Length: 560
Image (cartoon, rainbow, N blue to C red; front, side):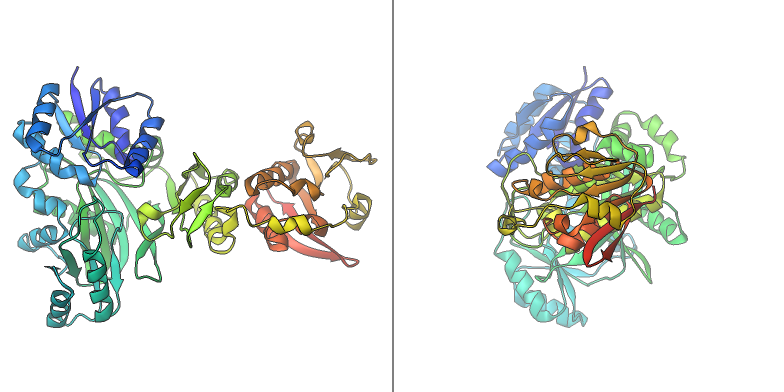
């Protein structure tokens, strides 16, 4: 059986394990040296979701020892699963005479300054920059070129780690000094910092694959990012490009020329680009699978292929790769990824977003670190400090974008519906509101037909079905009216439990039916009246506030 060595099967690179098995190969995962508890837990998270358990080996700090270890496995190829593995995979492949990229090109493949120098030498558009070791050098470079704004980042990094968008020379100096006093994404002290001309435009990703110097486009996506108060640049959401315009054709052509310019021969490139009024320009290439921990099945639904499988074609089946090169770029479905932005240091006790995302039509999966609670989250500053990702996909692009806009609204205005620290409803113990009077409510709304009254306690009522949280399971969908009359039942529930109870109850209303949430119920909710409206909107109901004889309600009408 042929052996494929995967150096660090993490992020989207974890798919390489199952891809290898499907090709009748034995996957062997090599971990880089320099463990920490956080790194070990990060790796284990990917191992836990694999169907097949790969053999795991450990690289040595001494290259010759690592080379000897790998030689014993007689691998057919060695591939990188993430950014920090690119150099070792390239060097090992060359020293063992395996298919791979020339090690002489490693600087252009991994260093942000060298890759732009390669573009310059190839006559392609590039970003002017300089590698500096002091803030004085950075200031001098900006002054020499007339830059009043600039980008400052480590020479080697990923996931926007250490990226600063600077609006003044003072901010440039501060960013350089901050980076020089910190470690890079690989845990090594930063000794050199790249200062670049600041380009503005629309940001895209082009993921390409290469086989013996032949290149093809796997996927195109568009980034949407936001600035932090500290000058960082964080991911907000991402979408795949469905319709190819002229500017996208120019971008794809430019991306393939970039692969040539850096001397890339085999594997995949995750390239980040801008398109401005001058056309496309490279931000940086990452010569490994895309990030985002993208499930292979999700990518197959979106594009009809996933890039780690295409990556193995490039190495192991060049004829199949050539045949697929002739296929036009044609995504199958629209997708969007919503990255969760944590607004402040937060101890998370409850992952309410999972309950909410499950209600949306286009949700594929929600990835958050919910294996243990509580978890301390830092304020989001880059992709690695994101709170998680919600994957949306549907045949109808409008459905995806509608769900995305709702998630953005919730994140910006109702964050306790995303992550909850257990404090949002502590004030409830002081509430002593009377129970809802169902007879009054049904009279206010002239309820007729099939009526469901969801109450704290069973109370006999004519002409309707009455349920409690414990007996809701006895009800079946199809009610003309659902009266959400819980109040004291919410006491003692975590936010996610409270939301699930509400959503399960609302689910009982028929298309065209009405959901009624009285004041004495919504006052027990985290965001009270506004929260009730958001909850109804999540269930795709048209929500409004109603007042009848000084009695207040939030009402939702089903349009499903």
